[in-house]
Length: 125
Image 1 (cartoon, rainbow, N blue to C red):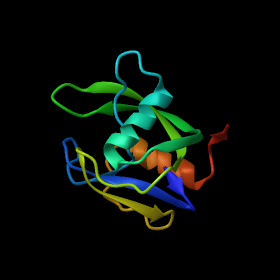
Image 2: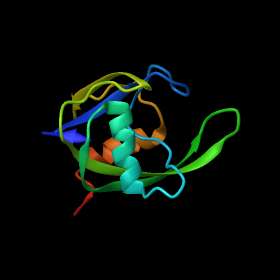
Image 3: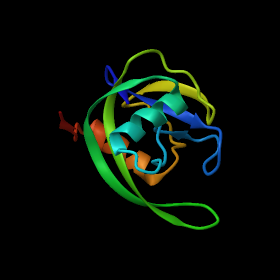
């Protein structure tokens, strides 16, 4: 989620990658549309409703754990509709300018999403 050239990241309070910064997101619920899941996950992790602005990219990755799970991530550009605050799986939320992204990022898809966001690669609605 970006606002005025900054991207919102959350600090994870769960494994994997406990204590790392991440893009708000998660797994879909049964029968949930990806756009609805994106809105729900941002609300749960960053405490703010969003307006989706377009698709940044689609990424394939292996989710670490006791059993490796292959995932398909859809990353959206979004605008916040309020002030973010930590959720039940996060300890902090913070906006970062494009030139000051923390190095301790969770997941390869987050790194690629930020790279694509910096390059302005996303389809606008």
